[in-house]
Image (cartoon, rainbow, N blue to C red; front, side):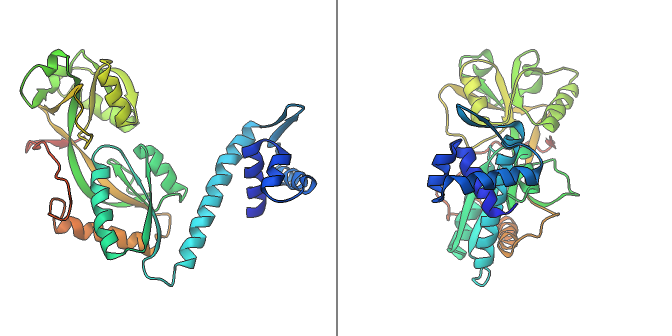
Length: 317
């Protein structure tokens, strides 16, 4: 098995037709068929189901299709890193970012870093913390901005920001009728709640409610903030989520949850198992300096972020 055979397989899997795949690869059909059969022999499993209707992927083929794409992507990134090695701080930086306020943080770092190192390009991938950690473990990302907690034995990172937990409420809901910018946690008892899907978040929210001897009525779990807001818009429930930079929505209101207040912490992480590139190390160093110099709200950046003031007694959730 080599990169060429992986390319052949991905092309056939994408077309599910040997003739069309051979044309795309600028080769004849018989040698392509032979290459696919040889790949199946090397792997010891059938990758395609062959019938009069054409080709379809077996369950093993589906798994291999995903992994083959990841392998070739990693190979391309490695080639680019090596080819740019002699040029100081050029190349591509692959960064994952969770939803919420993390993209707001990341955009400022990239703006400043790009001013110093204009030859660097970026690929930004969004996802849940668990999605991004999986991509880090498979070396598909160089860095990721995730929400704590994280495994410090597998990852090294620096805290980069805090954001309060808030309630996102349908505008016509009784809890939205007050002019107060805050809402008590006990006000959310017995109300259908939309919460983050991450297992550690579900557990933490349960413990948060238990501090007041109440239990959350969870009607929906989701990994994505946009999905949560859409559900709130339609009156499915009230969402508990870290405050985001989401554009103001006329159909919802946002209230700071207090008594007790909690905050989420964002962390910029890299894998301890992987050797980080000079580019990734330089970006981490830049972010550290950025935070120490408190550049977040300087005049360099076009927008200013409205924030809730965290109570002094707020704890990490």
